[in-house]
Amino acid sequence: MAGIEILPFGVLVFVVGVLFLAQIWGVVEARSSVTSASREAARAFVETPAGTSESQAVADARQAGLLSMTDQGRSPSRTTVTPVGSVSLRRCSRVTFEVSYRVPVLNVPLLSGLFDGMVVRSRHSELVDPLRDGLEGAASCVG
Image (cartoon, rainbow, N blue to C red; front, side, top):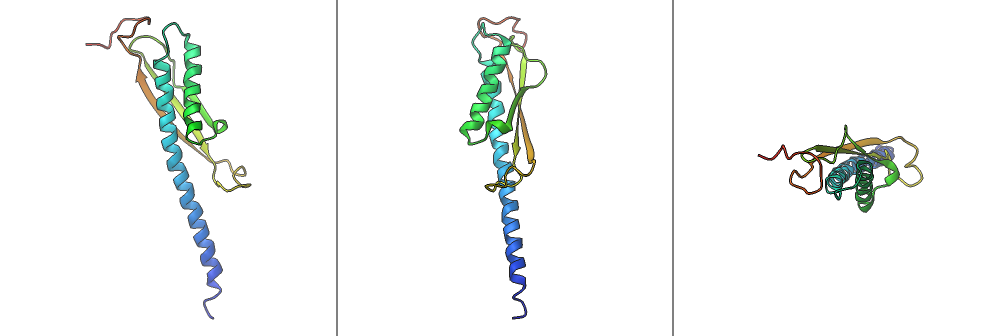
């Protein structure tokens, strides 16, 4: 009977440990999601049909990134998809998109909105195809 008072403390430590591991797993899973979404956003931009305005190409890239996050069960309201630097639909131009996602600290019903959370970010770069038809600029990156 001398050690019975330690049981509630042990249960508390176990529950906190499980919540901590679940949080770490949520961050790892979110990292995979933002990596995929940034890749999809960059690809959507560089594969935009010729004649599309750059602002429309950026909007399409944002939509592709948000759709990728939604397809993986992530909330689009916690996701931002932004181009890094200036983006251009010209041959050989490098385009980079960054996706960030706010992971809640506690993913427990009724408590998930109480804390600010952690932000997970990923960037992906693509080159606009140098041999593509309908784009401006010289194919300077082709040997």
